[in-house]
Length: 365
Ligand SMILES: Nc1ncnc2c1ncn2[C@@H]1O[C@H](COP(=O)(O)OP(=O)(O)OP(=O)(O)O)[C@@H](O)[C@H]1O
Ligand SMILES: [Mg+2]
Image (cartoon, rainbow, N blue to C red; front, side, top):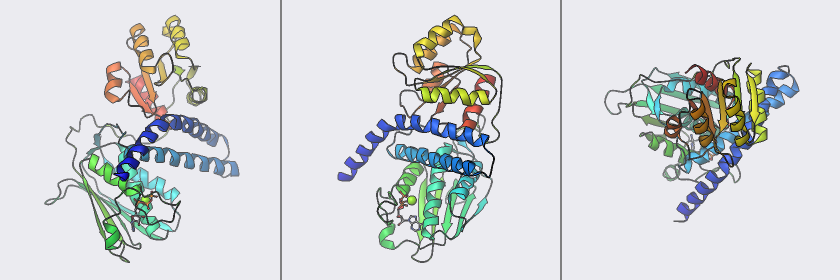
C-alpha cells in the first residue's frame, strides 16, 4: 500500500516536472553541442563541453526513466531491428564506463521486434551499468543477441553476462522491486531493474536471471517478434547531420529554446525566423504564408497552442510541412499528430542530429 502510494506520488511529480525539465535541458544540450563544434578538439574547453553534453544526456535519460516507470510513456511500438540500437547504446556505454570494464558483444542478425529505440536503450544501459558495478568496475561484460530459437522461445534473446559478485538467493527475489538496492545511500535508487522489468513487460517479453554468489550473473531478456509488417520499418542511423537551405519558421514560447533552435538550424544552412508569441507568429504567417518551406513549432504555449496553430496554418496552406515539438505531454501523441496533418512529431529535448534528420524528412516527405 505504501509502496503504491509512493509510486503514484512519483508518477504525478514526474509528469508535472518533466515538461519543464526537458525545456531546461534542451537549450543546455543544444548550446553545448554547438559550442563543441567551435572549439578545437583536444582543448580543455572541448573536454569540459563534452562533459556537459554527457551529463545533460544523463539527466535526460533519468527523466525518461522516471516517466517510463510512472507509465506516462506513450511511445509507439514499431518494428525495430535491435542490433543497430544495441550497437549505438554500447558505444555510449563505452564512453560512460571506466576503461577497465571491457565490453564484448556477439550480436546476431535478428528479425525486428515491436519496440521504441528508447526502450531498448534503457534496458541495455541499466543491465550493463549493473554488470559493471557488480564487477567493481573491472572485468568483462558480455552482451549477446540471438535470433529466433527453435523450441522454447520463438523470439529474440538479449543477454547481458558479467563475472561480478553475483546475487544471493535471498536478494534474487527482491532485485526487481522498486527501491531495492544494495548500493550505499545516495548511490543507487533501486529503480534500474524495476524499470527494465516494466519495459520488458510492456514489449510483451520476459526477463530471466541466472546468478550465483561469486559466480557472476546473466540477465536474459526475451522479446517476441514483431507482429507488424516489415514494410514501413524505419531504422534511424545516427550519422552526419543533413543540411539544407530552405526557409524555416520557428515558434516556441520559451525564448531560450526559440533562439537555440534558430541558431542550430542556421548552422545547418537554413534561413530561420523565430517567434516566441504563437499569435504573433500566426499573424505573420497569414501575411507571408508563401515565405516559408517549413514550420517548427512547440506544442505547449499559452493563448494559442501548437496544435491550434497547426490547424490554422494548414487551413491557409494545406501542404505546408510542419514539425511539432512536444515535451512529455499526453495531449498530442503520434496518432493525434498525424490526424492534425503534422509531418513529424519530435520529443524534447532532441539532439541536433535528430532535429536535422526530422527537418529533411519533413521537407522531403
Ligand atoms: N549484474 C548484477 N550483479 C549483481 N547484483 C546485481 C546485478 N544487477 C542488479 N543487482 C542487484 O540488484 C539491485 C537492484 O538493481 P537496480 O538496477 O534495480 O538498482 P541499483 O543498481 O541498485 O540502483 P540504480 O539502478 O537505480 O542506480 C542492485 O543493488 C544489486 O544488489
Ligand atoms: Mg542499476
